[in-house]
Length: 135
Ligand SMILES: [Zn+2]
Image 1 (tube, rainbow, N blue to C red):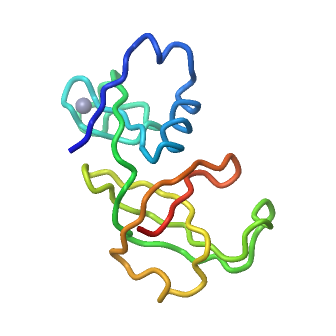
Image 2: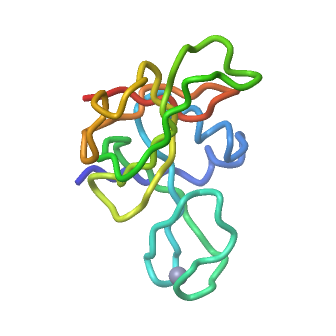
C-alpha cells in the first residue's frame, strides 16, 4: 500500500482543489482521512460519516481501481464537444474502500468496458474532472 502523508506547510500555499488536480496529474487521488477514527473519504466531504468529526488530514492514494458501474454518453452534451463518446465511470480504489468517479474517453459500447475492468487516473480536465484510462 502506498500512502504518502503531506506536509502542513505545503497545504497552506494551495487550495484543496489545486492540490487535488496536481495529484490527479501524477495519477494519484487526494483523500481526507479523519484524524479521530482514521476513516478515509473523498476530499469533498466536510464531516466524517462515521464519527462526525470535521478534522481531516490529506493523504494520497494511487488512482488505480476497478470499475463498479458506468454510464456511456454517446451524444456529447454542451462542453463535451471535444470528445465523441465516453463513459462516466465509478470505480473503487484498489488500496482503500473509497469510490471515485471519473471520465473515460473512447467508450461507445458496453463491450468496451466490462464491469471490473482496471482503470487508472491519468489527468484532470477542468471541464470534465478526473480523466481515466483503461489499464
Ligand atoms: Zn471519523
